[in-house]
Image 1 (cartoon, rainbow, N blue to C red):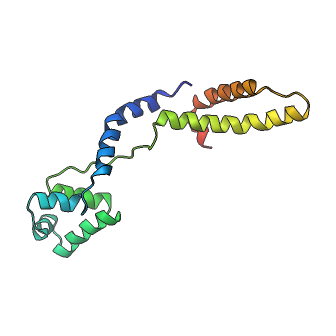
Image 2 (cartoon, rainbow, N blue to C red; image 1 turned 180 degrees about the vertical axis):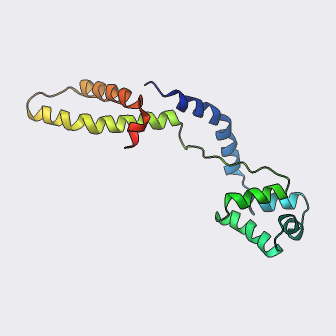
Image 3 (cartoon, one colour; image 1 turned 120 degrees about the horizontal axis):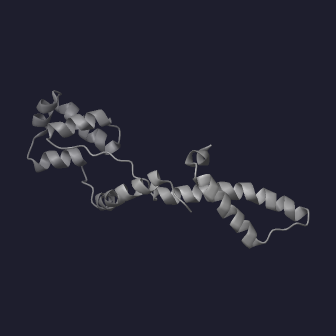
Amino acid sequence: MRTPLSAIQLDQSLLELRAALEQLRRQPPAGGWLAAVRSALGMPVAALARRLHVTPATARAYEQGELEGTITLATLRRAADALDADLIYAIVPRAPVAAQLATRARELARQQVDPVAHTMALESQDLSQATRERAIEELAEELIRTPRSLWR
């Protein structure tokens, strides 16, 4: 199946990131990244709070918000800057984009071909399984050429 170039390029650029993601999933800091970096630097919460121009309670709330997933990206970026660190944000598809496109194209093609094949069978014009699968693959090829059509 011919995959759009943008999907291939994205999959290529995500290869190393996927490997890093797996490592990070296996060993995330128990208290969150903000607390881990702050602690590794030997920086008390009060010092982080001063750098952020907030109260120590607010700095602790940021660390808690990271753990709970409620902190905003803007706040996380400010906290990272205060720790002289970079915030890295990425959306990494669970499966390669090319594979997701191929799966979706086949699903849609099957949804279109199966009712036609059923009608043909009722009219004694049965398609063989091989012919049906070939029709699905051909339609999937056509659908994948315009990925936007896969999500209507």
